[in-house]
Length: 328
Ligand code: AMP
Image: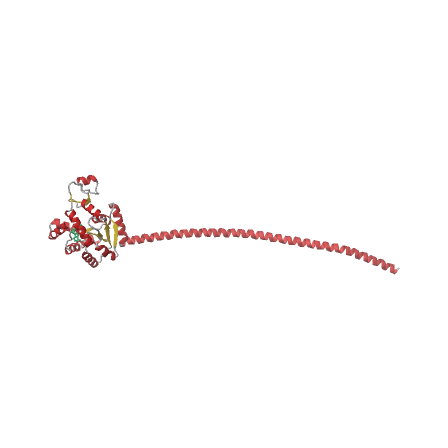
């Protein structure tokens, strides 16, 4: 991961960089720290930088770029880095872009840490550094007993804390003015490159770290890949759930259809039976009626035949009698 933390003096770039070092195992490269070390060691470069720094102005680009080029060439920076306090103007940003393009290691993200100006001044006035371990902490936010006795939270030693010479009120005002004029335009510069993320850098330190990590996750290839993987996993899970639901619904439908089919079959059978019964009933009825009709017919025929035959008999016996009388 190769990132830049942008922000005004006192916005917490140093504090958050130290946390990212722990979390990601990549070095923090602070041009302010490198310059202070040069001043402390009394090198030629340090002697040149001292006066400018104490006035709150920017050290020459050539000096700073030389230091950065050298530092980025070191072994620990090959896995990635957190640039803190660099670049600080457009010329430095362009030079960094060219250097990283040469190395084929472009920036992954630039995070702008936004803090209100009143809060910046308050934070800077409370800022102290430990002469033993170099750790920076704030007497305004440190536990009261440590703040009172000037105890370094890391070494535990009292009276080893000092205020940076450029953290006095007059220099802070000039540093903020320089930030507005020279560094702020970098926000747009990186926004246009599509790698800028902004976070609200006010509030609890842990909460700011959480916001910063979140911004980096959304900006860095690893984070994006993880995000994409997560999103894909979420999609797959959603698809599976939807699939299960559809299957369940289909199952229900199938069951319902099966039930309906069974019902209709049963009903069908019952209906057929009923129909058959009905038919049978009808048939029987027709049969009965036919039989009845036939019986009636027979009876009628019988009835009709009997008088006719007795009449005929009577007629014939009368005829026979007449015939006999004629013969006689
Ligand atoms: P910092 O610790 O980042 O606030 O820096 C302290 C001072 O170092 C600044 O006020 C500048 O005078 C000088 N400095 C740090 N970084 C740069 C830089 N990238 N370009 C020029 N001057 C710088």
